[in-house]
Length: 165
Image (cartoon, rainbow, N blue to C red; front, side, top):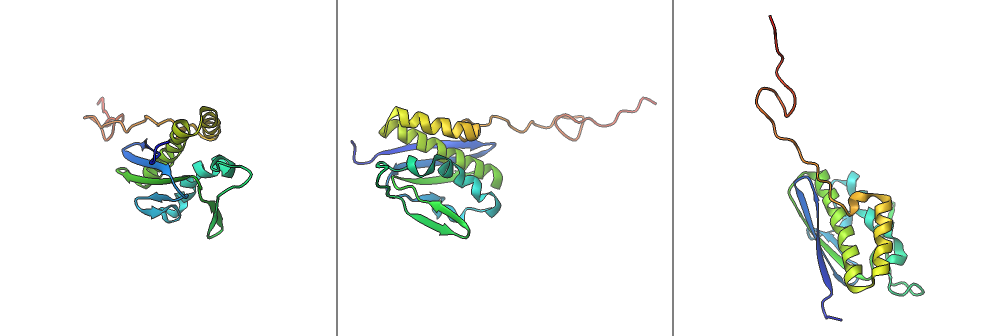
């Protein structure tokens, strides 16, 4: 094994792009240098936790009989720290909601890529199936974009009112 086991994956939603750097570590998950518990807006914070909560504790531990996972409390929500990997995410562009969806996609894709590259194919397929069963957009980008405005109306499809008399 190499000394630095790491993968880099990106997630996109509209114009927001998040790049997740996943490497062997002690369980840190940071977004733009801040802990996951401080992601804003607060109402969408749970969306960022989804990939970690879906995959569960047993997926992040090399030895199932002796897990190396610490629980950290933030308000009423208990978040389990990933014992095996550190994930650092940089996100740019878009609005708040688009950034949150790009972050969660980048985290999910980076964990799957890490498992494919450094663990084994069977584990990767289990993670992938669990994520796709919950929400396909965790691994597959949403290619919908805003349609540009055209002349003769207020928007992309709407037209100014026409009078025949």
